Amino acid sequence: MGRPDGRAARRGGGLTITTQLRARDLGLPMPAAALPFSPWVDMEVTGESYRTNRDRDPFFLAESVHQFAGIFLGGADPRDPLANPLYADLTGLAPTYIQVGEHETLVDDAHRLAAHARAAGVEVRLDVFPEMLHTFQMAAGRASEADDAISRMAAWLRPKLKL
Image 1 (tube, rainbow, N blue to C red):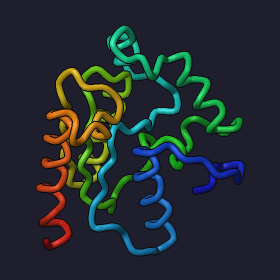
Image 2 (cartoon, helix red, strand yellow):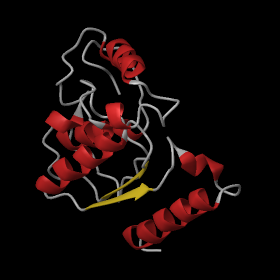
Image 3 (cartoon, rainbow, N blue to C red):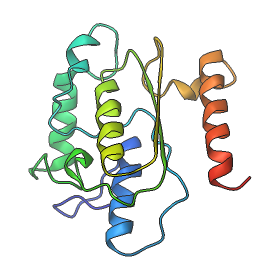
Image 4 (cartoon, rainbow, N blue to C red):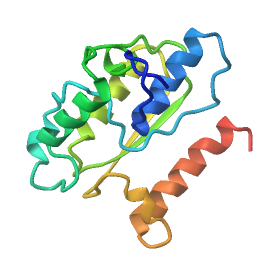
């Protein structure tokens, strides 16, 4: 996915939304579903959880995320819909299941993305996992919370894929 200045960039959960926006706008087939984990979508870093979870989240302090956003944007507008899906028309996007940890500074990004997608008519499920941090699902097989998250994801996804 190219940034507004043409250089490539990736940002995990947010990219699942941006990729769909480009595919939709180019008339390409849409996925059956999207599964963003802990999506970072707010390039303006305005979520209240940057303050409320500051002492809980060792990964994403607001100051660091501002720096990441500056690097990602390369001088482009932080409200560009392809950089910040909170300003995009999300109509026609695939059913979306968002998982996020309660103690993440990105938890407000997940809530805001879910609300914005629902307002555009997108089927959305949002699960906030108590006391979890960014991409805790990577501990699958070693942490019951991660195993639970993966099980929920699979159960939600199976009917979308007609499995």
